[in-house]
Length: 142
Image (cartoon, rainbow, N blue to C red; front, side, top):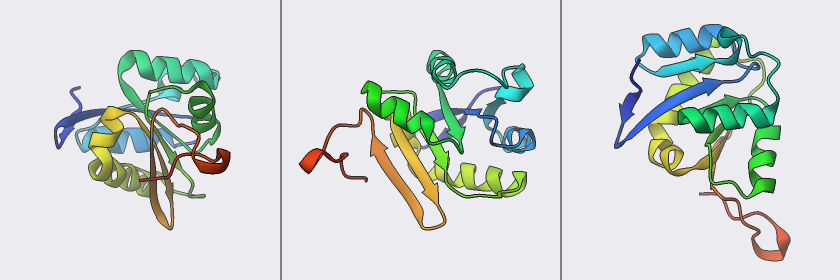
């Protein structure tokens, strides 16, 4: 399946195990190229290997796990992009809707390489690679 064109970007998604498999199916019905680790028999794949798989396939990792963002930051990596859903108890329909809204809102940044942190308060986008900011902190979010 081809990825949905959002703006000038074509965004393909790789959903981690913390996101329900049904959400991937809902996204596919909405025209997204969405794969789920569980559907591929990769439910126990280590985080580093998930990132490598996403990079090899040109996919954005969608997760509830903060470890992916930390791994990218520590490595100074430029990709793959990660959408970190920091919202607990999302049902699959809500997760799919939130993911679609995020992709449509920040598709160009996802295509270029970023970490998107999504909470009930909104979005925070950090371009990759993450570089130290003033006083040793992380660069300012966009």
